[in-house]
Image (tube, rainbow, N blue to C red):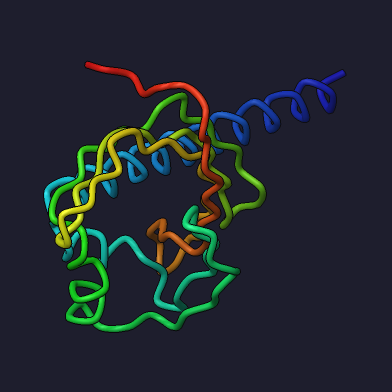
Length: 155
């Protein structure tokens, strides 16, 4: 009987620890997009994996695998975005292992590009893999799939 209670207690402790990790990752998801809205390239850079990322963007590009570049390269890559006002909707996360968390959520809002174009009703589903590196959660993979129907929430 004591063995069964010990097993149940260990499972509850592990579940509580995993819940803390998923909550931490969801907070980092919010932090990333708040940084994107503020053109805070340093924070976005710091949240990325040192190994780079695997990406599939909602603009129709095929999968890419990129080594982590420099902060200057990230800044240049994002310079086409004049202003973004996007928000995370309905975030969920599940821990896949001690060092991997899958986050998924909707991202929606408005994006103004430097060339004068505007994505007024930006809506996409995001699947995001976070890995633990040197004791910190880092973004390792993105997959965006656009949603073309309906509008966005207006806060």
